[in-house]
Image 1 (cartoon, helix red, strand yellow):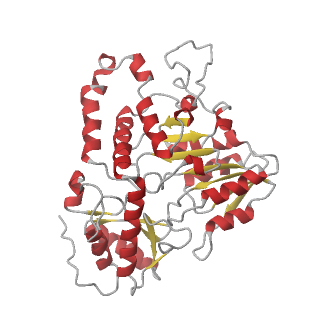
Image 2: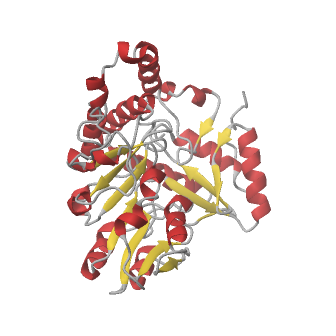
Image 3: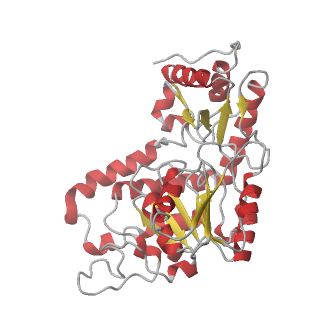
Length: 390
């Protein structure tokens, strides 16, 4: 038996459901929800009676400190924003690709990463170069093969949202640094599930949403900016990015000297509280332990479906795999859709991405969850007891 790392009773939906979909809308723990509700009830609803301008100006600092601990980074490089897309949409202006240079993207990456570049390419004099992912090849090497002296920017996800393929950022950053190209990494499908230390990577910008593996709700995200990028002004600013947000002199611009200048306006403070609590929970469990846990459960899943028609896009332990996102293929696309609908009806929640069944493995999952999933996937059902729909 492989037990969950966290208290399953803190996630009430697990009483009647099996949740293997943290890569989409992630579950929130009781502690996270309690703190968010408490803040809403005792502070937020009372306006400035319970939060002064000074308190609001400093409200983001505790969360910025938690993010810095998670990434082993300095707080001054951490920006808190309302969504990852808020930063990603500014990347083309921040990185400013050279004339007739190329920007390297992954063709099956999350659209929030690629679409700002596609829009910029309509008026910019540069080439968008897409790298295509296929199971038989090493995606990191495929990207590196495209990197040359004419490359201005490489922008992609650390872990691909649909396939679970993990990029070797340390290896890639060595090549981008050699040619002077900017490297932008979205860690949304990795932070909280695999260890990340910014000191190991020579990157320019990191971006991350807070509502998936980090365990908070929508309306909060963060970015990390290198010291070099921090010298630049944000392409889009609001009122909150000033050195003193409540300096309301409208004729003056006095932006923060830190990444705080990327915070444009009042955020979802309830989600800020949620992310602060959720990251603290992850730090207590240990992200290395979480990664090892998903390794074990993924291996267990592969052993169960070994003799079935279901195959992993990238088997665990293979180069470029990440066990917390398992993408399962089947010879029949109709079977994938029907199986997904059947699983949902039975209270077993996964996802479909790029015509494959996507299984997300989190710290609250255990081997029973995996065995119940495995019982539904092979052509011939096993003897395992299937979950009863509530």
